[in-house]
Length: 139
View 1 (cartoon, rainbow, N blue to C red):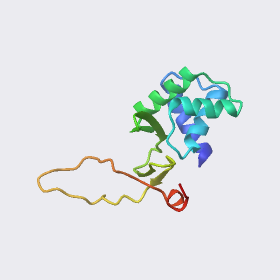
View 2 (tube, rainbow, N blue to C red):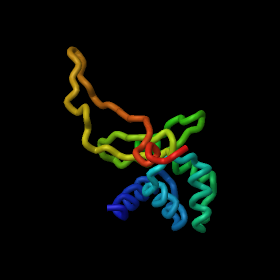
View 3 (tube, rainbow, N blue to C red):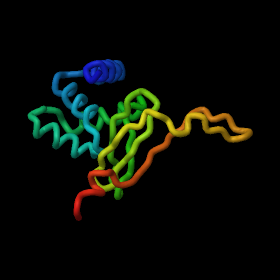
View 4 (tube, one colour):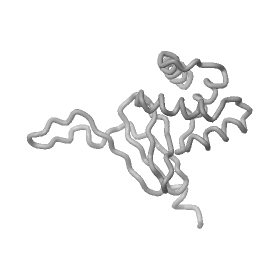
């Protein structure tokens, strides 16, 4: 599944004009597998620590392209834009405001929501709170 997703997203980025070098593909794979909200700077630092040689400008460009393709979302948390990869399937997010962990929810709790006189075309629904691990931790 992971390899299929990386391959599909790599191909879409390539079609948008981003040359998919080995390091860029590694950076993309890291972002796809990350389950925490990250700033582009944090993503750059994390992949650099792993020895992946890709520029900060490339990370920003990749994030922008993924946003344009609806394969990433950003959230303003305490004044910083943070990003998460979004698989191309209908889903929602549980976002921990303490550790910034994100969990995908694929079982839509509002799929049959109806409003009289209004035809719903699509929706976005995300939940912000404190995850179970952070609730258990002290401090």
